[in-house]
Image 1 (spheres, rainbow, N blue to C red):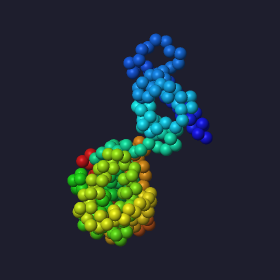
Image 2: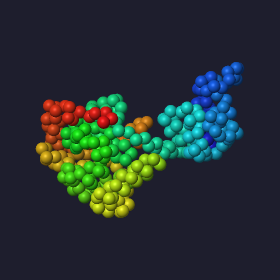
Image 3: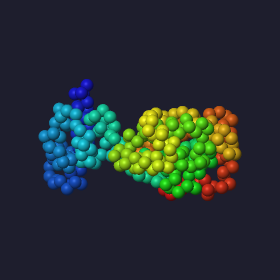
Image 4: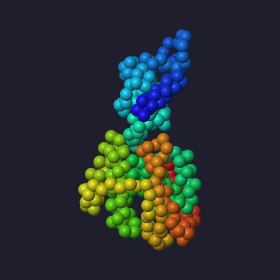
Length: 289
């Protein structure tokens, strides 16, 4: 099996190398027996031994390190999906998430959110700042457009904002779940993401004794799906089923979609969304604000 994986890695490297134009990288033209860069040219761009790179292409180099794969990915000008595929072939796992601070999302991703008219949906980054949302989320969960950037954080809203406590039925259980899920995400955030997450943890530990106690419990939970009960001042208790999704090509982002659990819950959400129509400017998400 290991040999098969090495052979697949070698085939992939040869294919990517053959697609590159030598002239685009400043390498001399002249006649070449095969298209693309030479092995030693890729090795030079990746700053690794030509012999080692040749062995990798021949399927006899053994398992490369993550650092070597990153150098090769850069040398071959791989896209992020191609780099991920390289990792799966070379190490049998995806690369560590690359944390990139963001305060907004693309218009295309916003349209995905907007298409879910009666399903509140949000996009969060690696440290759980909410960077995208739809009208239903603004109407039922929180109108994030009315909050400064630094306050659009799920943990801050949960532990330092009285509204977060009053809106969540059985706040204690929800708070424990949120802290455990954040701890799990923190491990995937990468080096810089972990630094920013640690700063957030330090801040919240100072501001909230409840957060500090829960954090010290070291619970870790999956955040894939579950049920949430929201107590809305106008609609009353609303039961929602939630599911979490990765955003393709953006490992630092995650999407959470809340679906009304029953027809009665759906009608409550519909009434809130319809009532918000007359105040579009207040509830319409603003990209990157």
